[in-house]
Length: 98
Length: 395
Image (cartoon, rainbow over all chains, first blue to last red; front, top):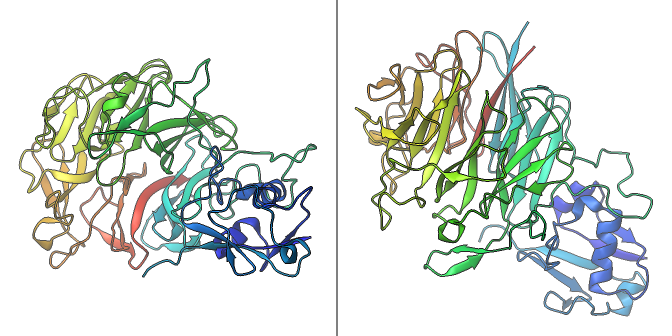
């Protein structure tokens, strides 16, 4: 079970609490976690990555275990602590304002 | 007893204002979709309880929201709470926020390029929905004008969208260029007598018309003169801000251009200027009285560099002669120290008698007049910056 923490507005869209828990089939990679998010919460499709190009939306970044995975390849395997549920996969929005 | 519902889209959420037929006391509900930009929301003429809203964010992209109960509750089309969100194969049951440019071999157009600010070519990139225009007859059919400029259509209540790619594929498409605010289809007028005819306007490409339901389009910019482009009389490239007409004579169009207030009597085939005695012919909104086809409203803005009313006086101007002779309407509006703007989709008229006029400002005020503009009152004063105002008369 993989834990995912989303920004406030996406949690509201998905009607979930502080974090979501997902079953991910096969290797737990950045792409497979995003696939799983979109499968179980299709209202989030297009909000984290582009519908067509599948590119991460520019104001969002991905983190896990203190590591910035924003620019990592989509097929990058997530850290073991994320895969076994000890640590969450973080989707973080750019800070509004300045 | 009839009532009135005003739909207000703002930079930080949506609001619904309701009143009885007198339009003196208003209830304010919202914010809906708090924290999101609501560029536009509009009700179906065929079913007043059906309302569509464009919800967007620089972070999370585009969402389409729908209400089937007059704005009390909302959902993303296809995602009603409690209903399955995936089909038997686990795939999403809807693509309500998917606006993919049509690149199919059969009816699509290649994903061509348009002109960028520096004159180079730039690929089309979807950013957001600026305007939603429900069908005049079918609550499940709705059009969306988007940035980068294209027109989409849904026939399933907003669950899925298909581009009418003949517009973006017009031979002049590569010449279209964004203005400072982007390049968007921001105006959609469904001809009230001819179901095959649609007018749209793009900043800053100009106005276009289809007479075959959206398959093919022609620029309708003859007579426009724009000194800020290399050829002031070019076929495309004009920064049209808004267009309005009256249902009884849809071929008569009124346009607020970047500069100049214009009129066409032949469905846009030719235009002539009707700015007349306006203190400034720059502005964004234009609208037509619900019962007097020759009565037109604009709100002059000082200039393209100073987006606020001339002399700090918020004045609606009314022409009862179809243009050229304009009178200032000021009763109830601030006449000093007012430096707000009124964006292109932020004026609407109701069909009550007398006709009601409404507009919203970037300062968060929504003003209403229940007597055709003679007297104004603030309905609500401290909303976020107002992007759009639409009005419905409800049974």
